[in-house]
Image (cartoon, rainbow, N blue to C red):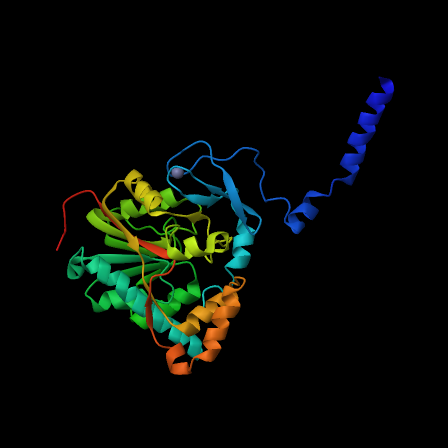
Length: 330
Ligand SMILES: [Zn+2]
């Protein structure tokens, strides 16, 4: 008996000695960046138990079986995200490729603004864009009659936007830091923003506070219902460490309802892209087989075709919703 107990003790000690460190496991990708033993609740529908399906660069990805929200938990800390959002992340005007990218953003922004203009009278509306970058979308909005404001984290991007707009319409900061009064805007547009924030419900509640009754929010975000997600599965190009949440039509609808919005419409979003841009994107965010294949196509087609604008429905959804109150329909 004593011998058996001694053997077990030795085995335990040997096992402990042989265990690689947490750092080694993290580096090898064996251990996920998780401090939890249990799955967290879905932040949208609060279903208690969530299976972990896969990981995004070692960050545990949880999927809600009820509303199909996916999210990273635990989230990357601020230093990890700050390193990702370095100066190169928000590419702006400058060289020829950047100018073309800016024109594409404007053309895509025109699609978003036109969607808003179907729900409101632009000439009567103060529009706020969250994360307005270099102001391409705001310029399109102003052309259609909206009075425009923007909020942007990057001071450099905000300065470029204000220069382009010819007025100090863009403020540096976040919705939390800027002192706008309640019910200040008739429309709020946030394209490719909600998947980046730590608290999407808090963001939508703040947007709701800023909107007048009857005001409209327009969101663009990657969609789990998109054909690219279905095709690429766990290799989907939108699975990135800086994307903390991944919505389906059902989960974005549910979250908007929870935050007091009605008249919710969700549809695949469309963007204006070129073969050249798609090739550069896949070169930056590599996907096995697909990235080399798209690179081949880019090299095979002549420049005029590579730079021709295409209307593409790829990986996103567009959601519009109205804050309850007196209507301002067209
Ligand atoms: Zn859920």
